[in-house]
Image (cartoon, rainbow, N blue to C red; front, side, top):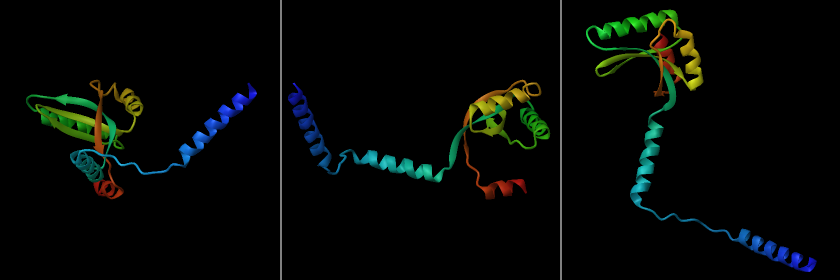
Length: 142
């Protein structure tokens, strides 16, 4: 019995060593359009520098004077939280005020709890926003 186990083990070891010694190349055969589409996707991602993140929507105004109301809400927010960013977005027919650039939903939720009393219509929105370079941030601050 012991000899059979040693023989089987030796055979398996030999097969394994032979399988590892074979080296070759892999050639993927596919439609040329798929390759072109992947290249286009890669080029697009290199040009457009964005990251997924979250913003908090603090207002959505529609109707008469909605634009001026949205600007007033944005200014009120920036006066309260000057270190944060605020955005006015026109999503027909609404003017929406969104604030913050949060990487995680938890960060957005914590800040939302902080401002909920002042801005009761808060909701966390998924978003993709551009990555700002240091030069763009300096220009924006001036």
